[in-house]
Image 1 (cartoon, rainbow, N blue to C red):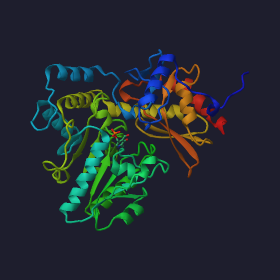
Image 2 (tube, protein in one colour):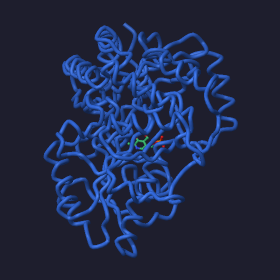
Image 3 (cartoon, rainbow, N blue to C red):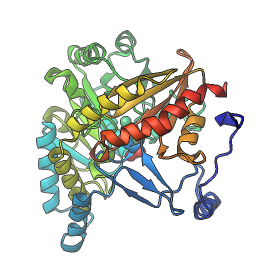
Image 4 (cartoon, rainbow, N blue to C red):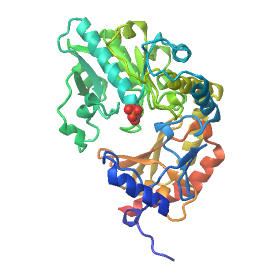
Length: 428
Ligand SMILES: Cc1ncc(COP(=O)(O)O)c(C=O)c1O
């Protein structure tokens, strides 16, 4: 029998010559701000990613883009229609038809009063912090502060990147720290201790995506929600990764009932159907009234094409029952994973945390699943950070609920995930 070579000692290169050439061209000229796995995406369809050399992989990291199927016909048709017959004016200096549909639909599906439209997640979360700080100034606070919690990820704008604590090595910390933000440990006592006369709000992820996934509990979440109410400060939740059905609810906070409702939420990623960047701050009148003319805005926030993509994706999320489907499939997936030795699993809907004992990174296992010789099906998921407290590494599984089936989950677990993860500890 061939000797087992630990994954960390294997070489994982591109799967074919066309991919290799494309990677060479990208590496020649792209800024080196990402470290992608060497798989080139040429086309995405259903749950699959295709490369130009004829290989395919299941997208188990669609939390970055889609809750619907990749290449969703309904969303693509709506965007095409808008391009052909719609309005290509990129400006909010006038009103537009599609914008009326967008704000009404978002307000209706989320139960909030007003919508501030932006493009990417970082700009929406940045606007949320600006909104909070503007409320502080309105209250006469000279140096207002917003509390974030450790291990957060809200994007890579200066505010967040310079204050990021979940990855101590990250180079963004070389940038001077943006003021107005305080980072507290993610426990109620620490958050309470961080509140002072300058505090205007607390901004959390309902469940942490990039810094985990790390899941909140109802007690923990509600204690922070109540604390904000008692201290008369705003409470906002970033639902850019957890929202729009991924965690089994339209917004993940809904799992905890009506009294859990934040004063505002941020939405992004899947809001644009994985096709067009669309993001938003959505909130109560009391919070949203702070955005007055000129205080916020962006050229592409709320332009017609983005609104058409968002309206279509929201309609299909609703029509296809994505929250319910994510819950059913997530529960099913976790039951299949639980039998794998050395693996601990936690989840909300189709956002699944997989912890591995006995390795200091899940990177080699993730590379093996995507690029290992003869793997079928290949699977794309990304390694997370090592947790020195639990001495476990972890990865995240987040397939598109609209394209997943129980049969695909069975195949993925039996043929790829279980064999790779049960061998992961041979890397020690
Ligand atoms: C919770 C959360 N907020 C904000 C962002 C930033 O979104 P974007 O990358 O579109 O700027 C991300 C991206 O991963 C995220 O996961």
